[in-house]
Image (cartoon, rainbow, N blue to C red; front, side):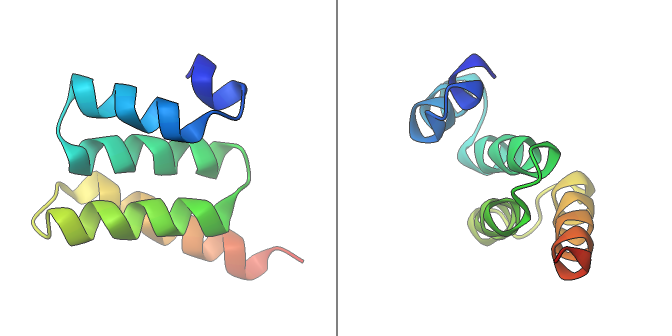
Amino acid sequence: MTLCKLGRYEDALEVFKKTGDEAAAYNNLGYVFMIEGKNKEAIEAFEKALEIKPGFYTKAYENFEKAKTAHSSSP
């Protein structure tokens, strides 16, 4: 999370990958983007998580839908 706060998202992704699988890493990164209001980036990360592991747990899809809704309603 500290790396994300510093804007070092690629480094954060690598750390997330070391603590779980690649799909979970992209889901984690997408969640960070979403709470930071970077919905376009969040959508891309969630899509990547679902692309890597189509059967990925429901949370990634739920987060993806939240980010899409927030993105479509933002100015």
